[in-house]
Length: 142
Image (tube, rainbow, N blue to C red):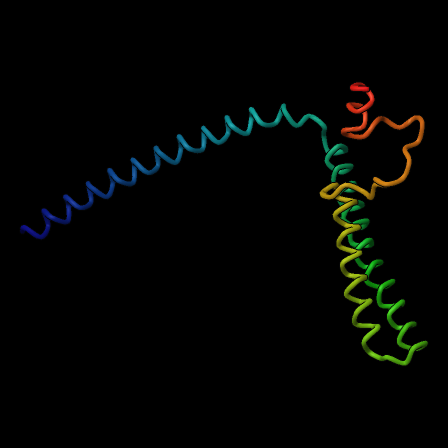
């Protein structure tokens, strides 16, 4: 008889737990629906804008990967030619393959905007270029 009472008590507890979980799930679903409703007006570009962004991302990725592959292939080609001309195979190929890889990575970083492009610090500036850092200060002091 006591076993039946315990089972009945466990059923009530399980029913209460299930009801609490269902209520919580419903509240979370409503909150998620509200959050989605607030986020949708912010992205009003529509499917065309998203498609253009995806295409732009693909184009940028293709360009960056081409920069890397091009650097490696040019380095390998120069190394192969040096090996053939000087008869030092495979050292020219190995050295220039590594140099081509480094050049390719540097080109990718420049294209991605991580590293600034090459500058001519020692050459004379063109007349229409802005003064470099530190150049205008000397002229003002004189």
